[in-house]
Image: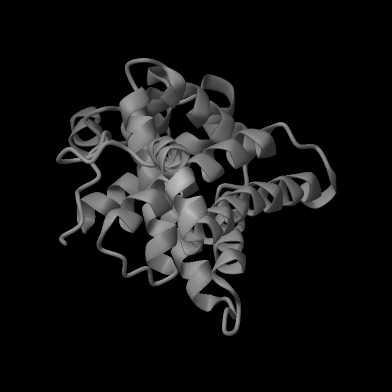
Length: 228
């Protein structure tokens, strides 16, 4: 608990420097200096330096989304609307675009890409958990794969959006969710029609492969398999 509190202090001290220095060693050193923290303590808290702080910033956004969603009125809302709300709350949780942009640049680097994929997967998992998802079969994977893609593309759009109150981003998000819903409706109609289902069995298998990872132990990025 004490280490987590000290990490929060270190993260807060780093944020003003991220805009200018990115999530870099210079940013980390300045945060230490601002706090007057012993460097050995800082390294014990965040062995990976600024990268560890960038991870902490992202995970803090996930937790804020969970709190905000828990406080939202969602009774009577359809799953689609709940997912849209949760994604929007998650974007608003990291409202400083420049800090998020710096993080996106960091986790796009080859040596940090796996960590970035893990964070996006974690966000998708947190959103579904916030919605009370109880699936424990292949749907557990497909829901998170699809949402990971929706979230990642929406973040990139949001970073370049200069519309009032990010209205263009919310419209973009609605379109992405709509696309996913159309795929599910299309599949359900085909599967309900036996002749058409037989004819489309091949394309449907291809569609599934496009939407879910190969289930082979743990997923890339460290996401565990659900218990079936």
